Length: 354
Image (cartoon, rainbow, N blue to C red; front, side):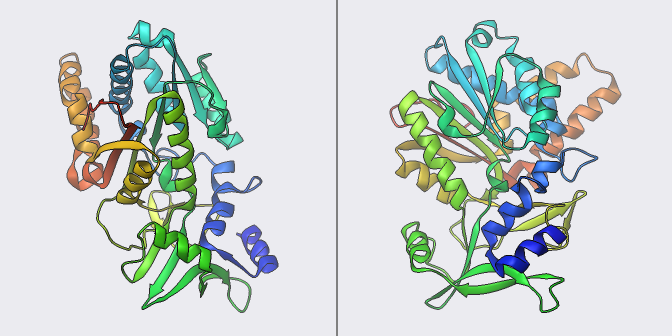
């Protein structure tokens, strides 16, 4: 905490996105740079840690995509923000059952944290897997970009609109220099222009501008348009046209105060899927539709697969598997909160899961 306070003492104030970036990704003390936050012993749990059927379904989807593209001799899978490597490990275990696909496959893991990269390498240990730090390192295709809870962890800007005035949300120190608090400062003209261009200014209240996510989406779209492929992203978010303040901080599986433990707790925001859809379309990609995680997994065949596996299980194993499935599929749990978006080149027609 003192490290973040020391930065604020020097800078006086920071826009929210810079504060998030320092708290999560600062090289020496950022949350993702020094922690393994995944799983029961960490701060939150993701779908691959709940059930390996999640990864198995994504693997089946990838193989079907490859078949739709005419079984090319080479296919590249890029996982965006691979966490502790659990999803990649599950994907590889399933891919090995599809020999021709597996022989054509290379996997790139986009990871900037040396701590997490070390954990991933220990877990995966497969010469088909390489690590990259930037999208522009990709130089062939077709390429499938896969992001599970990637975009929610990218820094966002927040702008508050009242009547016709716009204020960018910053963070600063209290008078005694011991606590962090929010501060609204008049928004710069080019920032107002950018959010107006994205049609985010029609309503009053908090406007979230996912600047980093937009950069990623544009770079991903360039690679897909150049080499063919697609983007499959799964994240929590909303599809309604509204302004929301969705910033949240989590520690030990519980919501915590945004400023209580910067660089010691996770900070995320919900994805504006309607905005993602518009950005991908503007960048010459076709988005079939945005669906719920439950609907996507069911259409790919998760219930049928669970039924097959259950025939070889004890009652206890079966109960455990279906309890985990419920967490993934129940509308009141992850089933409807998590959405799935898929984008591909405009002249293509793959639609499994949608």
